[in-house]
Length: 116
Length: 114
Image (cartoon, rainbow over the protein chains, first blue to last red):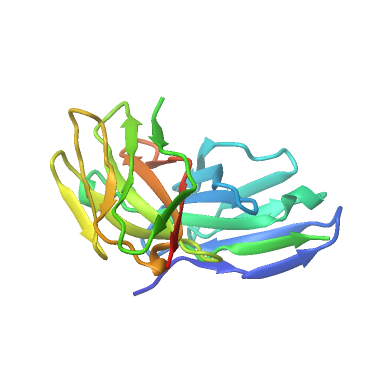
């Protein structure tokens, strides 16, 4: 079965550079969540999208932006990278449904970003 | 607002010991409840879920029962193995008009020693 695909899996950038992370949800899933997980930290919610519109916003820095495209994939754009942005970034996808049995979120393997 | 509270770790156990991780929630609606597990260096994986009161989710020897009266979803395993060392996250999902909303607890790190 198709899973959530994130690319790239690993990324090394220098300070002040930009990075773009991509998330491809499971087919027919219309909701994407982005999380940031620092070393030894719990996942921190960044932002979410439903039907290509931002649905919720968490602790996403102003230097970051994201969007969901017409094919439902999402991209997280990160500019002016700082050392503290080094983390595992993962996305979750699910399908908006009124059925309780359909409310499970599926997670990608994540993109490990290292800022040097 | 919606929130999930789980016991803080780390929890250190010996192999074959009994594991309990407490999880309680507050929600504005009728949530589905989940336990996700994150093994070292990996992403989150669904461990088990329950979608209505008194449902019991189970997988890999882990169990959790949806208790609406106590708003809890405690995770238990009768005999842990070294391979169960991971971080466990309790989560809830609510159906909203603007897409399902997913809320995580803070995670509990479990270390099982041989």
